[in-house]
Amino acid sequence: MVLFKKKKFERSVSLKKDVVDSISSYCKIKHPNESILILKGKSKKGNILIDGLVIPPFSHTGPTFAGFPHSFLPFDMSYLGIVHSHPSGSAEPSLTDLHNFFGLVSLIVQFPYGDEDIFAWDSKGNPIKLDII
Ligand SMILES: [Zn+2]
Image (cartoon, rainbow, N blue to C red):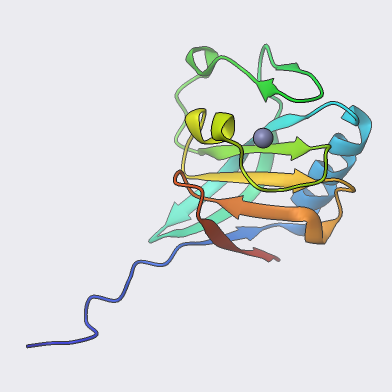
């Protein structure tokens, strides 16, 4: 019997520093409303690399909700998920966030939108390790 062979599949997210800066400034412009952006990049064996952002078409935002109709999105394998802001200051995903989960990862940025205010979550609301590179 082989123990330890089936190590739990661990996911991690790497985020380019310039992407972090773009997210941060976009959130600051939209504040106190929520902002939402599409994450672009590559995913390989559970490692998610985010190296670009796309402003979603037809997005509508308000102080408590940021969303866009997924059906309007072109099918694109480089779309890995979405990032949105929580102007209220908690990066915990809400029930609405989990219901509207898109892609592999969901990033949430809490006020005041600094490097340490970004958190990564999976579709079940579990935290994913996040590195800024
Ligand atoms: Zn949210």
